[in-house]
Image 1 (cartoon, rainbow, N blue to C red):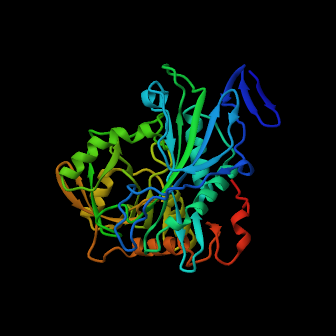
Image 2 (cartoon, rainbow, N blue to C red):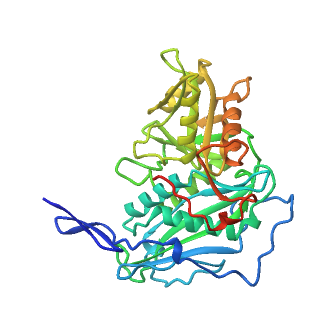
Image 3 (cartoon, rainbow, N blue to C red):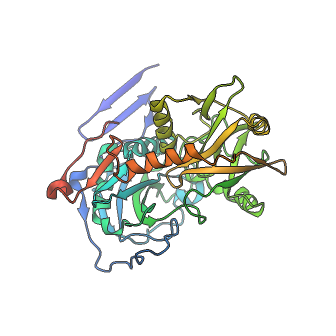
Length: 403
């Protein structure tokens, strides 16, 4: 068996025994970007008004098309609009779609930042590759997204705990029925101002439903990528959770705790060995490698105040620890919710309390540390500066990010 690599000026192909492993790549190029600003601006929310998550869209969108024959087109920033789609497009029939979730934040002095966007680009690329859709130049795409944010920077809310949500998406647009790698695809990015993900607001503890009859992911599946097909089957269990007074589902696999609907899960406890520990499920293919998850682990390890572990644990271990008073806090973490305390878990028709009278000091500390970085209150290498009131030439600056 032989691995062969063919590299041209624009295209890259990798073959294994004559079969392609990676789709042809014709690089997305920021220098080719075309900007068509809207002549009919959308109405912005009034200052201080509620910003329901995901319901309000900004003026513009980034669009880049791809075909197997020609590669990537020039990136375009166009007015937000409908996407023309053939009824036989394979995204509509076979779920060939993946996406990312990012945010842009405005600091008190007007600077605009994204938070660790290179991590999102890495995950987005992994998702598209797993679905046999085209790869792309991650650094160039990030610069295009930053340009979109600059074009629509007036949509970034000034309100505390608000931001501009960024949704990169890739879909197959091949208009032929058949389960196969697509010959055409579209990458688009839309944005919109958002407030807290949950209608209950920032930092109000939530309850979870842990129902072992529903399984989100399994070994060898795609639980570790942001594929659209991972989310549609969760809607029905989510409705059941809400009917039982729970905000989200806690997904189990053979009683092993994996993740929450929109969050990774952490438990701060005294473990069976008597050690103070912050534990979260390991990246074993069943859970999404969250950017917030990675950041909280790195922060906690920098503090070096307690043991920090990535390893599997079961719902029975959580219940036993709760009954023995060994749980300090349970919290969720994700781009949408940031850090959110969890107070109860409904399992086998019984609520198990996982909170304590001491409140949620670790959750509050992690939330503050993270949001201080995101909103520019604390200087950190995780911050990606998109634009600044202090430098006029930054609008055209091309930042390099190590992937």
